[in-house]
Amino acid sequence: MVAFLQMCNLPIRVECRANAEYMSPSGKVPFIHVGNQVVSELGPIVQFVKAKGHSLSDGLDEVQKAEMKAYMELVNNMLLTAELYLQWCDEATVGEITHARYGSPYPWPLNHILAYQKQWEVKRKMKAIGWGNKTLDQVLEDVDQCCQALSQRLGTQHYFFNKQPTELDALVFGHLYTILTTQLTSDELSEKVKNYSNLLAFCRRIEQCYFEDQCKGRLS
Amino acid sequence: MAAPLELSCWGGGWGLPSVHSESLVVMAYAKFSGAPLKVNVIDKTWRGSRGDVPILTTEDNIVSQPAKILNFLRKQKYNADCELSAKQGADTLAYIALLEEKLLPAVLHTFWVENDNYFTVTKPWFASRIPFPLSLILPGRMSRGALNRILLTRGEPPLYHVNEVEAKIYRDAKECLNLLSNRLGTSQFFFGDTPSTLDAYVFGFLAPLYKVHFPKVHLQEHLKQLSNLCRLCDDILNSYFRHGPVAFSSMNRNQ
Image (cartoon, rainbow over all chains, first blue to last red; front, side, top):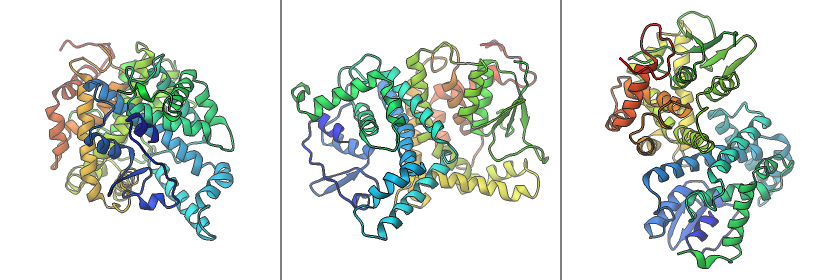
């Protein structure tokens, strides 16, 4: 999200709030607060930014836009769900990391209750989409497949479509960066991503360009 | 492979070999890749399970869920994607994800949640193929499963009621159909002249929507305006699922 807004050259301030999920109008993070408007989730935020005159995908034709939307769904479907699975359905991670982190802003016993409630919600969702019976290995395999598809699509290009970054680049960067930098009980997930060198290079490039203010001048 | 491959799935109607999307995906893929599949249609007897259909049974394996079944068939060398490039393979995965996220909720809603459709078409059809007393329970359970899936993946607090989500899922589905139509353009199939996994998935999801006669049909109307998608479904039906003993011959389009 931050990557997308920076790619659009919009000045932003990032705030981490404990009750972010409740502040959001749709219950989902991230969300942006502009003047007196609040917009949440990637799709609507992109639309909002577009309505204000900034868009990253204007240069794409219809077929490319279709492809971009399809790949964004793939990333949401596979990577996001896998991240959720690892955070909430893998007992080792849940016990050691997620519960503590999720409940940390709250006093006892609220921290336990909220963490369990979130876990129950996530497990329900997994079951509804058919991931309830997946083992960790199967989830990792799915992530691998997704990374392979992204890697093949990226090939040797700098960004997924032409020379300009689009919403897809921001989304992929966001997920891969999180996977690569978040501490989990095991490194298997980040190892899967590291297998694909062009994806690693892609992340590094975006990190350097947009988060270290080196290539800001390149954006038209 | 000498081992017989048996597929258990829901039966057909309205000109389709099956009215169940996932069963249709597997059947289409098998036709495209030349896998010799023996199709066991679920009927009123108590044989076989009906929970996770479609199910592929071989001598030593039982595989459920379309994605896993297709993987299994590919490992048995029945591959419909051998002519695709790596990028096209990646595109296939992406478009399938798009179908599952954007189109499936609306298809589920049209079949299982929309009251007019469910009570006049879907429930009687499925109930007639399930032995009593399961016929009283199973359709209801499938309907609740569909509703659950829609609400959990699309509903957001405080919009936990299906009415609010309806408009959104149909809008997404129409957009998805438009995107697919744009991508297909004027080609025969999504990747050239031979059908592949993506064609199987698109066919599986679209054909029931296209052919089954529902009282409430706005998504069907939208689909019928996208003539290239309808043409794709009709082509596949005519080439691969002609009634009677259909010997698999690639691209036999002479009628």
